[in-house]
Amino acid sequence: MKGPAQLVCFMLTLLGVSRRAMTQDATSLAAELVRGEVMAWNASTRVASYRACYSVEGMGEGCSLENSPSDSSAMELWLPSETGERADEEAAMARALERVSARIEGQTLVRIAATIWPDKKQKVVLSGITVTIKKNVLVVVAQFPRRQIRRKIVVDRRWTPIPERVFFLRGEVLGVEIRNDPGNAYLEGLNTNWKLEIFDLRSGARATDNERRITRHSS
Image 1 (cartoon, one colour):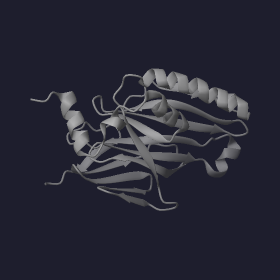
Image 2: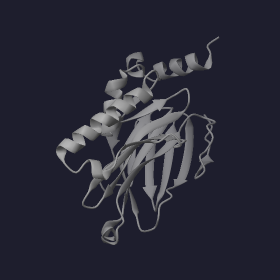
Image 3: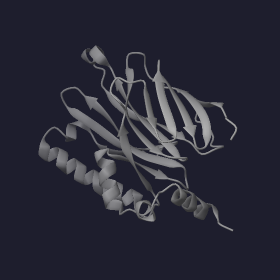
Image 4: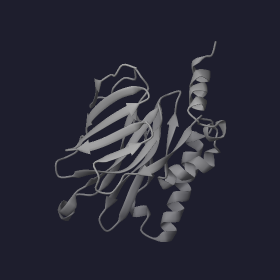
């Protein structure tokens, strides 16, 4: 009889996730997280880790490493004031890399690369999943397990949510990166920010506060 941890690894192997990817060198994975190139997924704890950023007009970007469903352990990577010059940016990223490497060392994490959301399109279709955005609402239709989820993006009306990238591991998790764009309101001091909407796709997973499963299809 396999225990929960072995079952998680067995399921991921069936899904085509190699053990090498699951035990990827912490420094290499940390570097990708710091650069915002990937999302990391812990299948045992059902927690996704990713970089979230915001911009400040005339200063640059500030970023943090956040976890979902809980962001209580968010780690600040750098402030906008730390990245004004190229040398400053490189130094800030080096410091962030050291901290992130230490945090994820020893964890079993799956690296999930990004897929670009088609420019000005309301829908993206990947193998086994379709994601649509309309009027600040994301609708996810997954084939494995078969379920449909509707989630309203919680954002101030002065920002326009625009999907930019998708992080997807079939049967496990979906992350949709949203750029909250203030448009001309940046003249009023509003700044662009990026966040990930995380969907745990495993059947029976508890919905987050602003998510509800609206349909459960039969097999």
